[in-house]
Image (cartoon, rainbow, N blue to C red):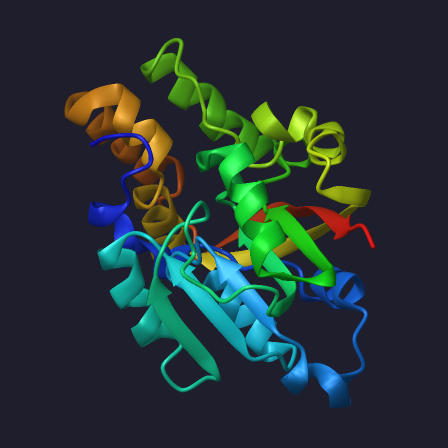
Length: 254
């Protein structure tokens, strides 16, 4: 499995968490009665986790996803909602010029070519539009149980390097990078903490959706990691997971 290739993981994405509706609602700052006319695009939409949140908030969403297997799952996942799906990438969305009030990427902006993606978003955004990059990493430091799982993963797979999930990598300098791009005039960072209860089955399924670990450790070590997680969660009906939604919203200049 290659890093960034989610073809074999698409069906497991149903187990992943969504994002904080309260945080998204605050960033949107759009009256409910106006939301159906507010043009929103979810780029790198995956299987529709962020799209589902936006649809619940009353927006119609155009979803763009490069991976055909993820695209199929996303279409099925949101089939009874006001969404439209097309194949494309952050660097080449295929969307119309100056059409969107709000462009978002959920847990995927760290995979793109930054300069090409920013230029593409400038092309499809309306003159006063905004772009939000959002992630929902686990808030490990508040949970001894989840810290223990991570420690055991690192004992099995020594020197593993996790791809940014909103706590490292590009997010360390994202505000500066967005301003330095010359495309955006303001950037606002928002964060909230929340807990979700997963069944044991969903919790293990969410681990099966992780690309960065599987791409690095090989099949043998991956089986050891899954076996370890199954053993650590044995007898647990519900697993309480602490999350953070972390968002950077950049606003176009006049």
